[in-house]
Amino acid sequence: MDEQKKDFYQKLRADIKKWLEEKTASENTWTEYIMLAPDLFHLLTKLSLDPDVPASKKVKIAGIIAYFISPIDLIPELLLGPVGYLDDIAATAYILNDIINEVDPKIIQRNWAGEKDILVLVKTIIANANNMIGSGLLKKLRKTFGY
Image (cartoon, helix red, strand yellow):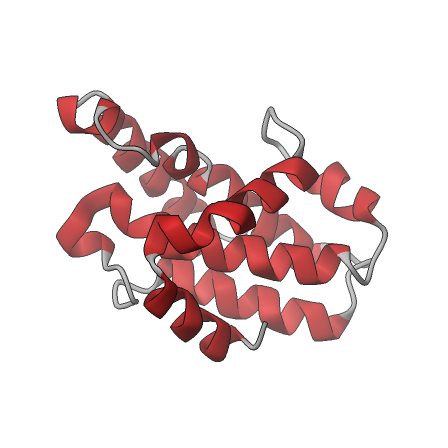
């Protein structure tokens, strides 16, 4: 992982850890999903370097990595804290689903550092994306990333 991605990953983990220690985190319906953000970001960086991932998919992965890192997106982390990663998480799930549908799912699984089954998580996030971020934002994400 290059330095900028590594620094972002470490900052993301620290921000979410701090947020989890606050009372508001336990009151948030989407805490379980927000906790996945660092592992999803890590997965994206690993897939971007994996020789078995087609170049066409790496372009989409690069777009999501840039979206994760960008302070300006549909749900800004600067204003909302880690709750602002919900759109990043939803977009990541849709891109991962696109990749899973075209390459061997084992490629995704071998790059996944998280504890739960990534294939199940992707389906669960997609099933809840509309409630998680709202249909209007979901439509904008779909238009932005072409899924």
